[in-house]
Length: 268
Image (tube, rainbow, N blue to C red; front, side, top):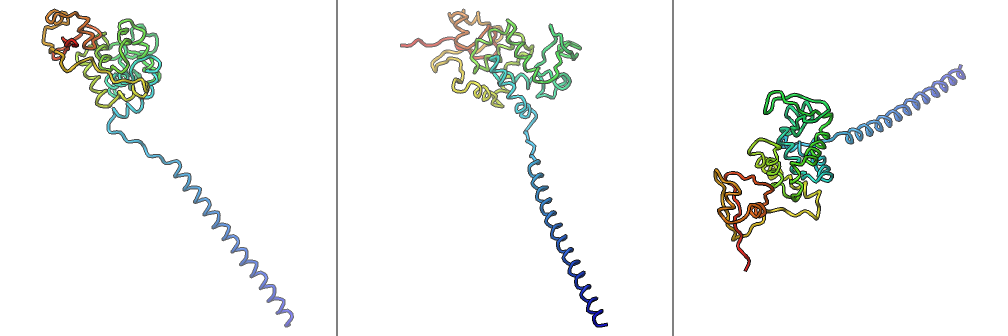
């Protein structure tokens, strides 16, 4: 009887040890796995989360979106990136206008001899035909081709690339827009958002800030209603070409209130 009790006790002790050992091992393994999974999950979340860039307004967002495209067009076609961006902002309403949203047309270029897709939109006249693009980048390229391949814009490419004021005035003079204040609007955008900085990046060390030639003792004249370059040249005894050269003009276009250099003192 004693022997039987002894055997039963030994068997009970063996099963008890095995049970405890199994529970401890399983618990340890489970804890290790949980820690490893948690660590990897946290690492993945940190890598994926990115803070969205915040812009002060839609124009700043537009500039950041298209600045590199404008600079590439400048490298290929010699059109100042500042002018391209300013025109895009003005013509497309910083990318929110009907033509830019529905047709990716950022420069208001009409159909003319266009054989691609079209969209009709009220402009100077009702339901005029405008070009439609698959992507906005094609609109920027077509803008470059539109200016570089038309003779009426050829004078623009004789200007210095730094001379965004000359380009702005030249676009209006060549008939790009009918708005009388078009040049001033472009210049205002360029100077407000410092778009000329993108020209600097493209030109590098060759960039030189352009300023119309002037001296402290130059004589100036303020344009009034009825004035023409010819009438002013006759008044001051100089040629129209001399007036254009002194004021950085590429044609005969002048505006009321514009200050013109009409005489430079001779060097002693």
